[in-house]
Length: 296
Image (cartoon, rainbow, N blue to C red):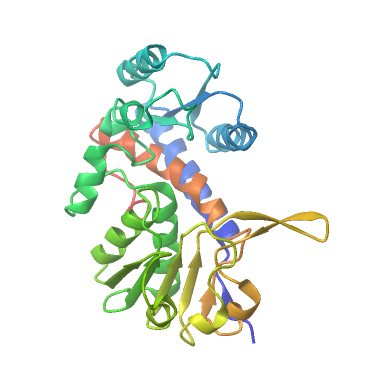
């Protein structure tokens, strides 16, 4: 028997619908149109696809989309100057610099140049600190999407033991902070953790964000646990490229109480939460009430 599938694609569609409704109300009532600026440096194919998708979905929910595509050789000074202009532009409420950046650019310096109030990726050190101390922050999009799926499935997460496999600044660490904020008991593990299978088997909620294809098999999973698979890995099988997660889906789905598929699970939530963060940033910038259910 396969566990309940957590349909991120449908959830993300519903979330975009809610965002579109709030954007329409903002525009109608206050004459405000949220604006999202995306900066792409270079011609990384995966980044180009992602940026196109972001731009399309931004326009679909009624927001203004500002795309800035720069040559791979763009200097750090030129990129920082662009960010300064976007920080000062009242039509721009959210700024996202697409990662990875070319090797000659300092990603930390660039991300921390973005105004924390417009940092809709939630990567600025100020937002990291605010999240870590339980204060109002811009929350990274992928962990926020995972939290929304978990809240929707469980209702209250209080008292549940959550194991996060992965310690990245983008997913693992903020995911643990968000779950702690919802009163889970947290274990942060990673690829070098001793007795990792035993630790995973203790989890009521298992979040896999380690970036290794199908690293976690079904016999590492506690029967009835909820599995959130953040991994998106491309593997070659039978001469074809296939997307797989960090969890071995077939064996895991037979044990888990609920599980996200790959693709169609966490992935679609990321852009939907980016739009939600842009709406939240817009409301905060204008001193307006934030819509409920769109942030942590």
